[in-house]
Amino acid sequence: MTSRCEKAVHDIFPVARAMIAKRLVDVYKFSQTRSAKYMGISQPAISQYRKNMRGNKKTSFMDDAGFLDVINEIAKGIAEGSIKPEQVDDSMCRICREVQK
Image (tube, rainbow, N blue to C red; front, top):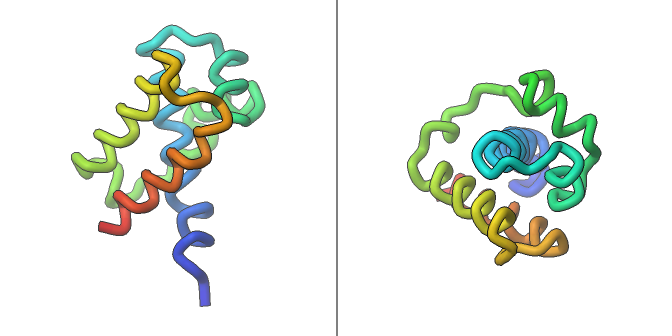
């Protein structure tokens, strides 16, 4: 049996990371390298997210207002400095809890 966390890592996190990465680059004008540093992933991963080559699985929660609010809050927190690179993992747990509602 698959645990909730395993399912989140497989189904939720790639989509969430893609959405956050796109907001950091497109809205907050972060470079791909800076976005990658803050998110703890590689610059090529950011590039793949932006080109919809990764994290592009269509899921039912993508249009959920609560999910989108959390994504926007995390991207804004990273951009404004209230979420530090070492806190991004904790933020991903927030996304998972929102989707489980």
